[in-house]
Length: 371
Image 1 (tube, helix red, strand yellow):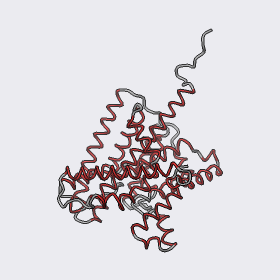
Image 2 (image 1 turned 90 degrees about the horizontal axis):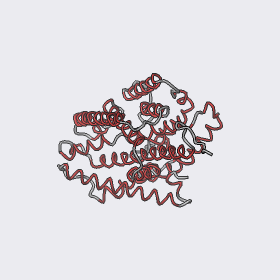
Image 3 (image 1 turned 180 degrees about the vertical axis):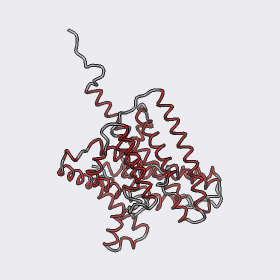
């Protein structure tokens, strides 16, 4: 008797599970790329000083810094993607939403509080001298340069019952309208036209909208047109990054304050670069075959939160001082590249080692957000 088989266009349970595993690994790999970008962002900034911008090494560090700025937008886009795919609290109800917030709070907030207090105390013990100051830095994420992400993420969670209503269920026009609305909101925040802090979800509205739209699209198939699209996106990223570096160098002046303002990622050129990079990475991750680099990126992605929390404290207290602190007054590009690569590798490896070690033990895994 002939064995019955499912139709060709209906995946078997095994193939569906394999496809889901590949999709989850591709998302974890994107998180891994994102955390490497975040560590590279802070590593390059620690080495960059206004007095270096006229040197070849300084210009290289500026390019590396601006090129790594897509990390946090990528994470927020992935968060919106996951929320849009998994949660519709109109149907699930208020109890499900409360359960979701409680679960995410248990997973993320205790570790956030510990690393925030450690980082703030290492920077200035007065920051943790009174309960009021501690509460303030925990609410606004000011304990360190990276911690603002956690309050921003939880604002996204709290707002999701409303934002989820905007997820386009069908039609490219609705998707384009949501992307356009996100771009307008992000630009309005940057221009000061909306009374929102830079660290609010409104600042990242473009990337949140992108994640919501991506959740409604089918994964791309491997075909010749995909390669042409990737090449076009990478070319757009290269052009916008070069223009952004020129803008940054001209706007930085000779002060750290001007340089910090010029490096903000919410301006049009950085936003265009970031969008091109994120879409390129998403397409590449979706169509890439399993490989050792992808598995390594996915492993980092699964522990990205612990690396995110610990890396800057490790860099500031140990890695950066151990390697000699500031660069020479007029470093060449080769010297700056080597120092950046060594500091990046040491910081990433050290924070990953801390995270994986803590995650292995039941008593300490909460310190890196692992359940």
